[in-house]
Image (cartoon, rainbow, N blue to C red):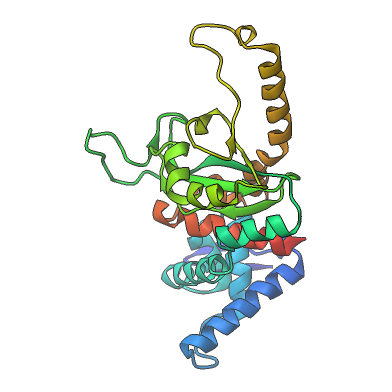
Length: 277
């Protein structure tokens, strides 16, 4: 079928959203409850909760432009952005608190949890540090974005996502702000494994031993090298968490909204990922 607009003939087609229906229905119920909570009159919205859920999930899965999603839904770009932000908000509100997560981990008898950080790339945002460098630019990754801390189970199941810090903030600093205080309290019986970026994190945070500066790994004692190897092996599964979330929810590969929203977007993706199963 084709339609004509502004003198051009466009071809339309039917697409399939590659998301399980129960995930769409879950978000639809959250949106419907939100509308009742804020007193939205019935029939006053351009889209119902189900179609709004489809728009939001398309953005998460396809990393599509909001203008295109709004056009496909027959609404304005401004309304599309408003519906998208609303969907992100109702999802991120369902994300678990870190203390709640750690309590559940202890209750389930987990042997450890894994802490890791990742950069969620974004468009450049005007913001300078005192030294004149870009606040949202990561020298480590040579890209603009936000630093997110992830906590995962031994089997790589994502458990918790922190709020965002600018890309220039190191993992250890972001962890001190958002994760370490709670992890310290849970350290007895539930240690945290992390990589060398968390050196100096403190009690209960198990990290590999660094080799002496200017020397090879062989300079370490054999027992220490074995410990490092075991830590890397056990930690490897958990460190796949961020990559797998980015592959399933492609919006996390490059966020075109404000970088300040990256934390909410990542938490929303975490919630969706848990419902997917």
